[in-house]
Length: 466
Image (cartoon, rainbow, N blue to C red; front, side, top):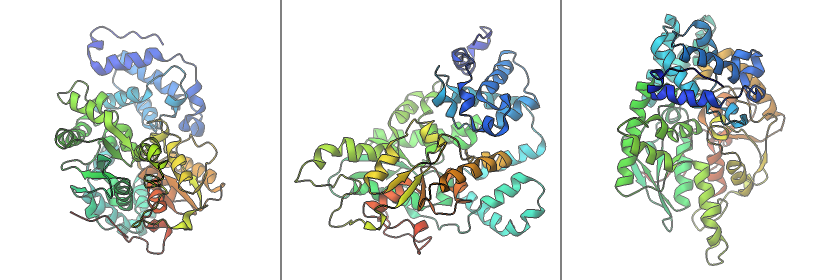
């Protein structure tokens, strides 16, 4: 695509990056075939190609964003399916992030929109505030039909029936490995996940320590910044991201880290992009170091059980201790999971944002589950961070489509690697929805996931506390 940015415009590093991305686009339209909003709305401007034209016109002409442009950019899920499909390697993520930052700085939204975005930015990244908001939503649920704004109704509907108690395992501390130490890793405990589902981090700690990892919850680490980053609130997102960078860099410079483990794929995509986000910041070097060792939990488990564990697993003197389905005297797997049909939902941020497609399925199969995939597994479920709260109508259409394709596989359980997807799909699915790592923990000696058991909401066999 030909561009006409001036030398003065290109002095801005974000504009220079957007120029590179725009010039890579060849207008082929392959992206329209995998864009969820284009599939639902059928509007060219709600496809990546259409949005690219809108962004190009806005940036090149240095014009104030208009309502039409903002509407179509806001409708983008940032699912990044277009990046997987694009034969030219157009890095749409960086382009749309720049557009959102540009819009946030130069467009005055209607008061209702501004208020909603302000509330979301000041509640969701803060677990205790979010817990209070969830409690308020539960109290207000009977009055939801009286609320005229569909977005506020969506926020109330999002609140789970039960809010789990705070897990002290999310506090800064270190969990010792069981058996021979193999790696020292930092676990990102997240923000919204700590309020919505504490079982995920607990399961992650159990399975990693069982496989020989010393697991550190670093002092000062918290929200990755993704929620505010995708709203265009760059200063806010960078402020929270900087805290993580400093916290993890301190661990790297202290006792060292082999990996930063992330079990919420939306966060993982953002943390892996810290190097780009902070490329012109004094924290650039540390940000790049952090991004370089950021790993989705399934990436690390694959390394531990296949790559690193392969040689030892073949050694009769060291049988199966490095295997995700292995046993030892302390942790004996529950055979009830064997053969259970798991419908695997591939979160967009994992399959498109991080290009991790086979590891979760391979690990589940290796652990004894029967894994099935829905039709059109590349399409988004409609959660997309805060998208289901700000674009509830489109989000619902995508959710209904996703749930239909998942349930068509007649699964016993649905597994996903992102808390947003779990909440979205779980609100309509007829079977339990759990995190992939919960199933892997169960298969390797941990407790049955509470969502599958009668002891719902309890914390069984949690790791020792500080």
